[in-house]
Length: 325
Image (cartoon, rainbow, N blue to C red; front, side):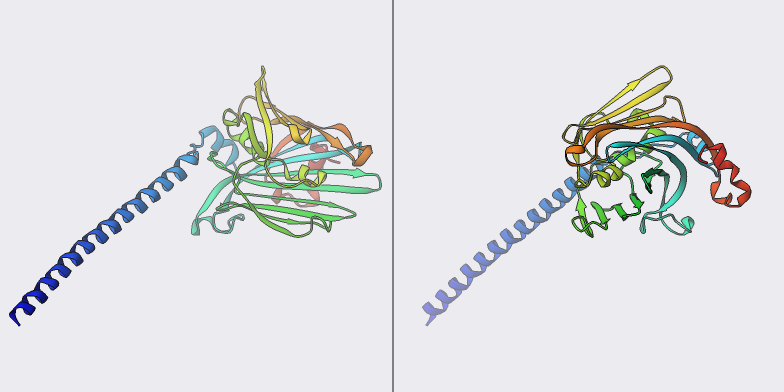
C-alpha cells in the first residue's frame, strides 16, 4: 500500500512539473505574440505617418489674399473641342476659402462647433453650345490650404439636352466614388479606388505653392470632365509631368500616353500665381470621325468679390466687367 501511495505522489509531482513548464511556455508565447502585434501596429502607424506628407504652414501673404472675405473670379475665352469641331464659349474659375466639415465633407455651417478643415475651393465652369443645344459643365474641388494631401472632395456635373451626369469622390479611408449617368452602360455606380494623384487637385496646388507640384513619370486620375466627355473608366493612368519656369510665368505640362491626351497650364510665377491660360489636346469625336483637336482657354478678366451678396439685378453689370455677356 505504501508503495502505491509513493507511486501516486510521484505521478502527481511529474504532472505538476509538466503543467508548470507548459504554462510558462504558453505565457511566453502569448507575450511574444503581443510584442509582435504591438511592433506590427507601430510599424503600420509609422508607415501611415511617413506616407502622408506633413501639412505646410500658410504664409502671411496667403492669409491676406485669401482670407479677405472675397472670392477670386477669373473669366476665360473658351474654344472647346466637341464632336470633332471647336465650340466658342466661356470658362470661369472661382477660387474661395471656406471651412469644410471633416465628418460630413460639406461646407461647415458651424465650424466652431465641429472639426473642420480650411480648404481652397475651386468652382470651375464651362458653357458652350453644340449646334442647337447647350453644354454646361461644373467641377467643384475642395483642397486643404495646408497642402500635402489629396483633395477632400470632388464633384462634377454636366448638363445638355440629352440628359445630365454626375460624379462625386470623397476622400475617406480610400477614394469613395459615386457615378450617375443617363447612359445605360455607365448607369449608377459606387466603387472605391486606392489614393493617388488627382488632376483636379493640381489647380489648387498651383495657387498654394507651385514649387511642390509633382513632376516625373507618375500615375494620376484624369479630370472628371475629360473622363465623362470621352466615356472612359475613372481610374489612374500613367502620366508624364514637366514644369518649366519662364521669365514671368511657369508652364505645367501633363501627357497621358495611353490616352493620347495632354494638358498644359500657364500661370504667373509670383504669388498669387494666377492662371493665365490652358490648352488641352485630345481626340474629339467618335469612330472614324475622331480627330486630334486642341481646347484652349485664355484669360479675359479677374476680379475679387463677395459674389454671393451680389445677386440683385443692380450687379448684372459685373458680368460685363468679366466679359461674360
